[in-house]
Length: 195
Ligand code: GAR
Image 1 (tube, rainbow, N blue to C red):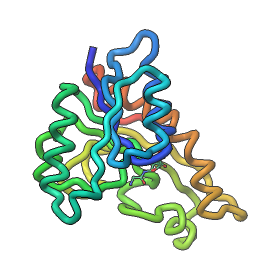
Image 2 (cartoon, rainbow, N blue to C red):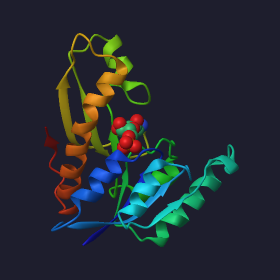
Image 3 (cartoon, helix red, strand yellow):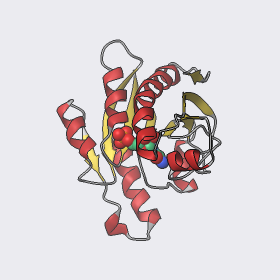
């Protein structure tokens, strides 16, 4: 059974979807939910699900990313994960950090990559007049929101969509896509999942 650590910064709805998907017969199990925000709502949810939690507050480290990442890495290493899932983790990780986890770290991003790397993806899709939007799970490499695509889920943009509405309509698709990709990935299968 592969050991999975999940990194979050907020509510952790994707983390919950991943953790639920690993209940029952599954090639992986959650061993740690780790947050850069000690107050992240997802930590309590993980605790209630019986998953070990930890946090490494990024704020005391200020601009010293290397020191923050050293602390993050040490918290991660204690759980000896085989796979690390970024699930709404909102800190940019340096190439030095991601290199260590390359091939073992996944991320979910709320756009149809390679479109709209970075922030405000829903607003940017609307501003561009796109007719479709979606989310992507990809392997994490040194470049932000780059790396081999392991799955995408898409939806049609409606005339009355706002960034908030789009985000809300996309979230259930994220909750289907990420578990589907994780299951395959844990089985050693990197064939992309398209929903
Ligand atoms: C999700 O929509 C995820 O795709 C996005 O943050 C949200 C987290 O929600 N991730 C990013 O924007 C990464 N740059 P959650 O905490 O409820 O899973």
